[in-house]
Length: 337
Image (cartoon, rainbow, N blue to C red; front, side, top):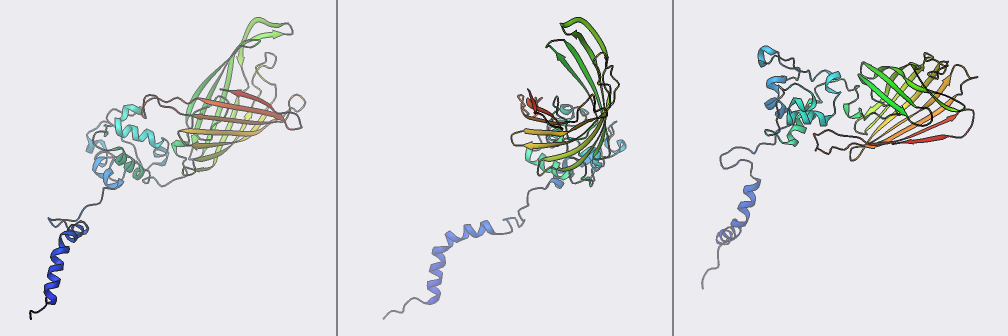
């Protein structure tokens, strides 16, 4: 009578059968590779910054001096909130990908589009945004396109020149020189100087005679009340004083001072769309000649980049302009594309 298989014989046979299936799976989960090293995690934004950017911009983001970089150029300080917060991330990505000239920076800023992927550039930019501490500065993404009638909520430093040509009844060519100066993270002053030329008219119609002059100059103070990039929202309050500097007889001014407090709201929308809303009141100092009025302005638009992500964009908008007398009366609406 032959003896049955021993316990060890059964275990060896089972191992020989199962081993070819189990070994590859265990090899995938094993920590050390065949040469004894551990698989390395992908580099972080900080790692990519230190390896690709720190040779010029410094390990801490303050920018190395010319004596170390060999460049006759003062490098920006990424720890300075007033600088690092002003431009939207897409513009920084364009500079990193295609070099400084694509957004008006120095040509010494090289292009990294062939050395880094877009994902790696985005990781670097996320890290750079952590280098400045004062987050009270609204991000450049809130600097929405300028509408014709609706104010922006974003405070900035710029000079704007607007021209409006009137073609109905008496002709006119009116201009506005707008100077805006930012103070600190959330405050801005604004000076608006209107001037132009317009055709004289009477009860019988335009006379054909043109006159030029200065309009009513406005001085405004803007203050950001709230901003949150995660929500895509920014809100500010502006108090504007319109002074009677224009010639009332030539219809370049009202002849009295007007106070205009208003709130502006900006909202980032999907697909590069945006919404801007302004609402407030106009309070004249001479209520016999002027009425207390409410105002509502809204601009809806979207930015398109026909030349690709880094090309020049244009932002078509539609504006809805409403006004009414506070003492009562119908609301008058205008639509302006």
